[in-house]
Length: 162
Image (tube, rainbow, N blue to C red; front, top):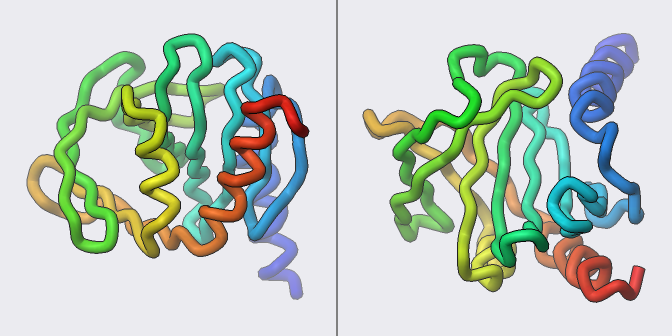
């Protein structure tokens, strides 16, 4: 019980710092539905994994694009604005991308933007998302369970139905 409480508190601490400017729109299938005023009120889904990585999938309404972002306090060497070549796989299908480093309230992370906003939906139609660094080492593997349903709500949010 103490361990569960510690994990819950750590997850709350990890997300509360990152969610200060986000507007809560609900919770579906393990994902928070939120709206980000900094991205033109773009809607997103966010969850926290056991290693305390915070993952977001959403829409940047300012630049009409989709994105996924990952934050983790353990990634201290990521620099704001730096570009990082990565490869990611969706159920084994490989994609090369450029992640942009950022630091949100002392929590480092990286974002991959997609000009095809429908690609966010394509991500959700898979079971796993695995991210690799340029050396081919696995950075993280994300279980996408519940993502499709949560993104349905994010699309409703984006279409102003929430």
